[in-house]
Image (cartoon, rainbow, N blue to C red; front, side, top):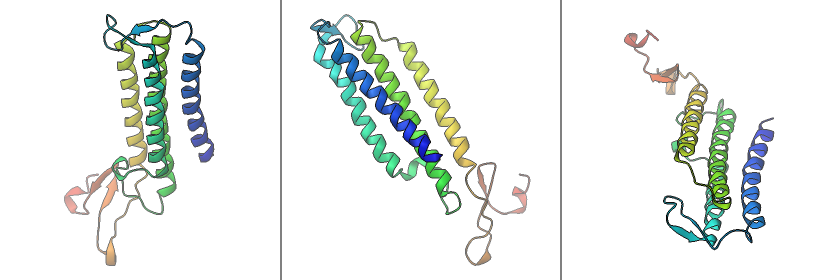
Length: 177
């Protein structure tokens, strides 16, 4: 099941990139030599600029794949143990690939706007940022629930306890949780 989700997310990312490149290539002859720039529609760029967008998307996807293969520690806000490693890795991979889908979708929107000679609306950028924020919040809530309650450390001494995603010491004044 978990492998199916990861392969599906990889497939969606690759599909978006291939669709972006094929759309540019199929409409290449119909495009004018100069297209409007990204930030300022009054200035123009060469139509070869359109390949920068899929190029940046492919580079971002390759970097994302390296993070999916071995996630960096700063992305995982919990202590990974043998009990939660499988679910933690699945959550991190799903989150990273979902953010990749958002990035690729936005890049596809931008390239599609350029190919069809439409303006890139800033409101769409804010919508994608909002979706990324919501995805990050959901990821953080899911992954902090995976941390195992560990009340004893070395030699049976109280170490720490995790309640509702918060790390607390085992002291009497913290028993209100």
